[in-house]
Image (cartoon, rainbow, N blue to C red):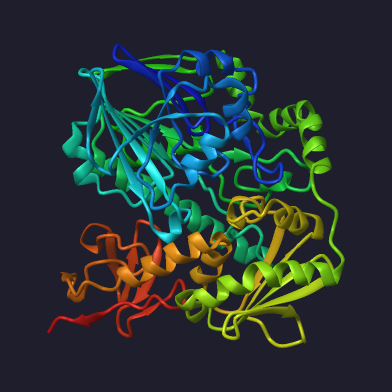
Length: 512
């Protein structure tokens, strides 16, 4: 097996039984905010798209689903490996690009195609898109590969039943807007960012320990930010207030924590050939070039930004013109109020009005009243502020997932009173009746199953209220605080209260 890194989560996997092109992302994403790091624009994308036997797109986030690259460079008669998501949005998007041949893989069930064993594990929770994320397992008869992408939580026991993993591609860096966009004192941002970076590392480490792969490759990140307005978010920020750890930083930290793990640097164009305990690694960069990329990162990124000025200018020119106040309000009311009418659990979970400042127009999403209206001065626990052209563009494009456009762009600011509210962000990911119906039904079906475990002197429910991770595996108790280490959600065991977000309390009692 030969695996060529294509940047971010992109892989080109060659086997005797066929080749698989995974998540080929090269064009700027999220309103021109995200670019792959390092630069992968000079790879021969047409070669990978013409020669691959299979295409695998893990999910619809635009740092994985690059419509322009897929349209331009990938042959349309390729066989698409399709995750078993709850809706057919990914298939519809691919068909719109011209793809017609789909291999549907039931989640967690191996299928064989011309000597290649394939398993796709699909995640379908509201935190996963909400239409999902997925991981790919491959076995060519000699080598077993696990490409995790952004997919977590995963049932690692089920993954390992597929086969002992030789090559493991694991997400290691941040992929969220927190805490960078929040209006917080710098000291608080630095503290929260440091916690987030440590949480990201701890999660990756737990997966690495659980998978027990012969070879580990940090993958699926980080992005870089080439627009002057966002340049400060690169890496860990100017003063440690950002969350984006790079490949070498992760490898150094992993080397200290797990010196016996065979971990390897994968860059765009790097070819890895894992074979039992050995792995031949061929970089297209010289040692001097690698030192420049990572050791002189600001200078490297400024050079990259100069090359991408035309792409940034084209993205800005593609945005819609800001809408007049009355039309803006009318458009949002007609679009969102029918969704709010159906969104019982989301509205109850938010529990109050949320303010959306669109340029100089303050709008309220009144979840209890199920209406969208102008702000009348009332207190709102949650406020998001962004520019009017971005909202107008989302309206014109009928963007059903504002996480996949506005929020991940980090071209907004946020403030809140109290803890994070998952339901608010879930609503902004579910701006179609199809998604609202799915998420509401998902919440209905995911009530506590009544199973408990005993952990460090406490009896607690087995499943984390956030995304139902097994707390027997991922729970960690310090004093009276339980942390689900998969996503860092914390619970006060003495009261059952969730310390991370409202509406996710846990059942817990001390064991006498």
